[in-house]
Length: 116
Image (cartoon, rainbow, N blue to C red; front, side, top):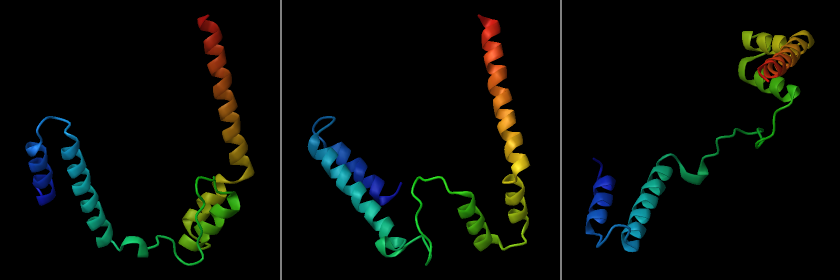
């Protein structure tokens, strides 16, 4: 058991009654200080996971051009990953996958109709 866990256990034992606001507040402060220490160990706010020239995309779905540019910078132009990406993004494969999806939905509706 780590020092921090022992400290939290002691705080819980010192509480007059379960759910004591003082106990909860002290436990939160202990946990917060532990998180701050761990964050400082890895470099704190000075460490940026993005390298120069990169930008955050947030929750947006990357375009095909973004995927290809990212793959080129990661693996190079002639790598197997680039070949696989080009194959998956090919017109034939995309139409085939959309066709399978439509077929799956049609089968779903047929099965639903049979059960009624």
